[in-house]
Length: 202
Image (cartoon, rainbow, N blue to C red):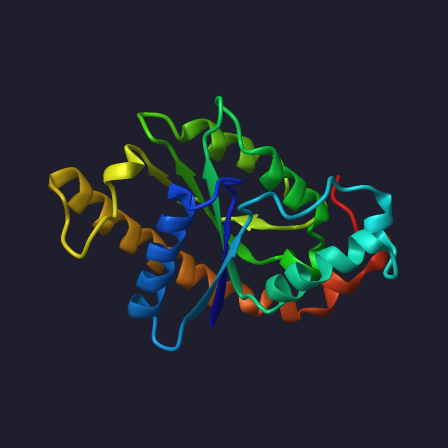
């Protein structure tokens, strides 16, 4: 089982990427044979999406291809969504525009809201209302909100009671994601998903 984790922050050495790496390590502890891949958007590596992304030989589609292959190889997904001015970073929304059902369709996805203070809920709401219609991403009911992120998941031992709770909650939620990943594998193998007449959501 392979989980791709998209760190949606544009910042270099971001807290979102640090937490993504922590979750990747925990996944490999919690699930036998589980592997993970952290896809970082640090530096905003993709240009703004345009229609040429749907043309296989275009320059923009060639830039997307390595990300596409990494997503296709995943059985489940995690999206790290830091709260920037009450919103999801534009690079992460742009990333979702590139995604298609071929890469992420009918794969379970965990949303992780990230905040340096007491926020983090707005990105979760924004992700739940966008990105899934045509891609068929399956956001799972559970999500994580990592508040006071500078003091969470730092070092081997919990920094205090709040950090200890978040570590336990993260493990619980990752286990839920792994169970959804097992359950939806069969869904992606059914013939009904191949009906090109209804390739897009309503």
